[in-house]
Image 1 (cartoon, rainbow, N blue to C red):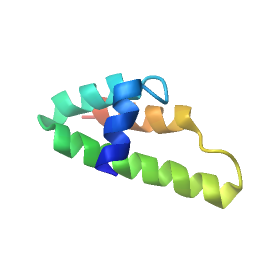
Image 2 (image 1 turned 30 degrees about the vertical axis):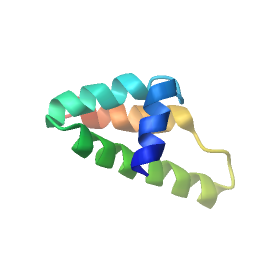
Image 3 (image 1 turned 180 degrees about the vertical axis):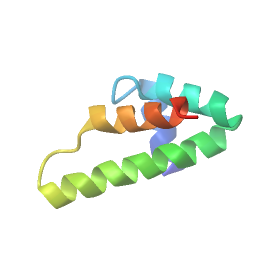
Image 4 (image 1 turned 120 degrees about the horizontal axis):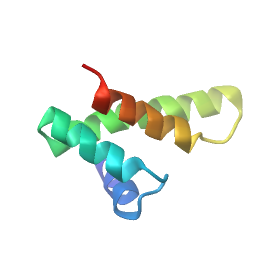
Length: 72
């Protein structure tokens, strides 16, 4: 999954993921830890997609990473 997050950031897909992971990395002072936090958000988004039978929601995924980057 590290490769998935790295690839998403390199192409900024879904749009905004690069900035969200960068902000999270600064907050956590670790790119590795930021990737793990993003993986949790990605896993949640995929689980919700499978459970609901709907396509993955990239906007919700990016928003979840952004929330982690900005929470106290």
